[in-house]
Length: 284
Image 1 (cartoon, one colour):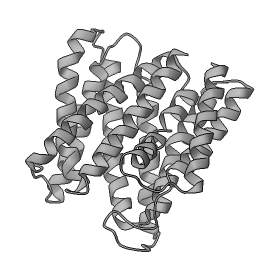
Image 2 (cartoon, one colour):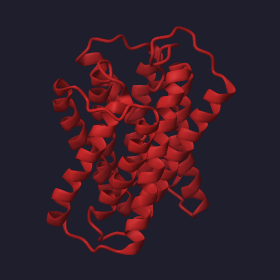
Image 3 (cartoon, rainbow, N blue to C red):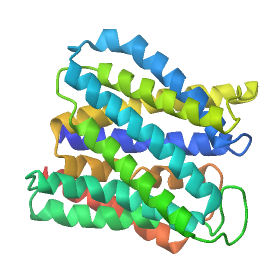
Image 4 (cartoon, rainbow, N blue to C red):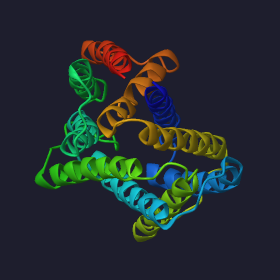
């Protein structure tokens, strides 16, 4: 039960963060936003970690670094795929891989959630795809972009690396506090900074975006911290699939705050997400 609640907190945190970041990215490139929010997240974790306590171990820092490396590379490839390909394909395929691969890894490692949880997992995977569907455009606004071989590779690669980040976070041992998360944010900050430097985008965001950046940094720390602790108290196959439902929170905010239209597919996805969480909660 604790793991499910923490995973829900993580999903809501990721979803709200994506919404805030998405609104801000309409004014500046997403990569420029991330190179500011990631280091700020690191500073926040370093400020809170001593209060949380926990033992600093080599294995926990190594798994944290692995999670940060995978996450930094994943966000780079994901943004490239969104920039070049159709969001209507890139987003749901990535989301399915992020949710599905950790489930498979958990089952291979011997996890057996039970019949009701299996149904919940199946519904959650369908919900992730439905709520992640976007318009048939890329982030640059180009209509009807092609899902080329390069975009397909970027999409699959980002989904796999995001999933590996979940798997690495699951390997962080209990009792190590937030120190592994600090290491994760350090490595991911380095990755996105190098990418931004290579792309000529290592520039300070406009001053008016810093409130958004600060908000996303706080949400990032809360979501990742909650997910890491959820993994320590629950199964990889269950926690990861609930955490991957974060697009539902983004869609809900886009509907209520921005008044965006929600199609029937997304509505069905939202209902399935609620049903999936209920089933997994009962099974836990």
